Amino acid sequence: MPDVAPLLEVRDVVAGYGRGPAILNGAEMTVEEGRTHCIIGPNGAGKSTLLKVVAGLLPARAGRVTFDGSAITGLRPDEVLRRGICLVPQERALFPEMSVRENLRMGGYILADRTELDSRIDEVLEAFPILRERSGQRAKSLSGGEQQMLTMGRTLVLRPRIVMLDEPSLGLAPRIVRQVFDIIRLLKDKGITVIIVEQNAVVGLSNADLGCVLDLGKTLFEGPADGILQDPRIRELYLGKRAGAA
Amino acid sequence: MTDILQILLIGAALGGVYALMASGLTLIFGVMRIINLAHPIFIIIGAYVSYWLFQLVGLDPILSMPIAAIVLFCLGIVVYKLIFEREASSAKYSEMTVLLTFAVALSFDGLLGVAFGNIHRITSPSYAVEAILIGDLFLPKGQFYAGVISIALIGALVAFLKYTRFGYAIRATTQNRDAAQLLGVNVGLVSTITFGIGIGLAGASGALISFIFSFFPARHWEWIALLMSLIVLGGMGRLMGAVVGAFLLAIVSAFVGSYFGSTWSMMTFFLALFLILLVRPQGLFGAKME
Picture 1 (cartoon, rainbow over the protein chains, first blue to last red):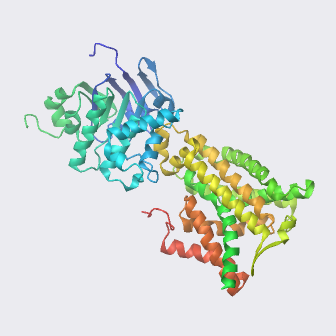
Picture 2: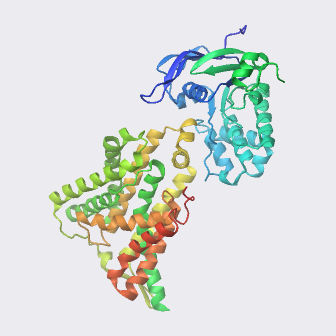
Picture 3: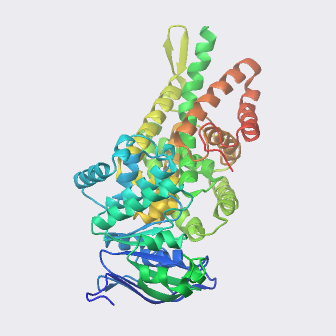
């Protein structure tokens, strides 16, 4: 367990969509500041749902989410965002008809100071030179990898404390996936806490400090990512590898 | 050659007014996926606001246009809050709104019929019967003023969407509602205000058409087909598409009306609607449909 208070805590959260059955049935998660966390689990385990609850997109039916010592359960998405928690959803959440620069501007929509916003956009463009080259192009004209880069770069405009990435490598070629994880390392280097939900559990855990195994809406295990990668039972059940296999 | 230029001139002036009539409809569809069959009845209400202000206090319809726009903006907000907001999260929202807006159109049609009767009315400022002469060409002043003001209003709308923070929020919500919400846009508020703006634009266009066309409550049924053809041609939800569609069809219908008679002029819009849906259902500027 961490020596310092966790940045984000999810405790005994129950949640579901509409009047449907609960997808999360007492989920737990402890997130440490400045570390990269990877949530793994089979399809339907509630991984994306957990991120939506934290982001305020889905209300928790029970349980508690605290961020930096304060409860954020029940806050609206924009209120969660103002506290510095950004969610990058599974499908690329771009505005296809807007230019790269306009998309970045939307990343700082909640910032009132336009000059400050412009300077932050320039910072992001400096970190991603390819986006600077394409800053006048419409987002829909970018390649898949560039679009993912723009989606992730856009979160930096807000200088968030936590970035939650839902399946960031989904549908991307292996070369682009490596670029995506390079960006995730860049986020970590900037001191941002990262939470990744990754279907490719081995890739996700290999790039994370800590891991969380979710199944049927419950947290089965939390701990160091390399420990999860080495655990024979977890390897067999969730990583698709037989115990003892390389 | 003079004939062709003359038809082009009249078609272009009408195109500006049609573009303003359609702009609110396409804006509302773009942001909320509401197919607003009641849009033309709001145009008629705007026309009545200007008509009665002219009749009762002698206020010029161009000057009463902002009043009509504000009245209709407020009416739009009330209608949205009472009827459309509660169903906004429904998966079948778009389909439901066809029936809901049909019911709204019927209700206002009935109310206007009771209040004012189905009598043809037209606002008659002096310029409505005057013309501008350019060599051998002439242009009715009313159509010219209405066309120019419509284009100016659309220009203001485009600038608002392009350069203001709220305009960014509207465009973002149009293109990706979920992503906009994730970035802190209050999509509920954006939807409400956009519906108000769309209906406000209907009010403004109503004030302008009040001195170009005669109107009566049931005339909105004729206009919905016309407006749908414009926005389907341009691509549903595309503002610039609606503007291009309006100019194209207004000019083509002016030619058809001139060479085959005015009865066939209106057919241009119906035929265009059929052809677009058959050949290119996404319209000129819309993304290809799956």
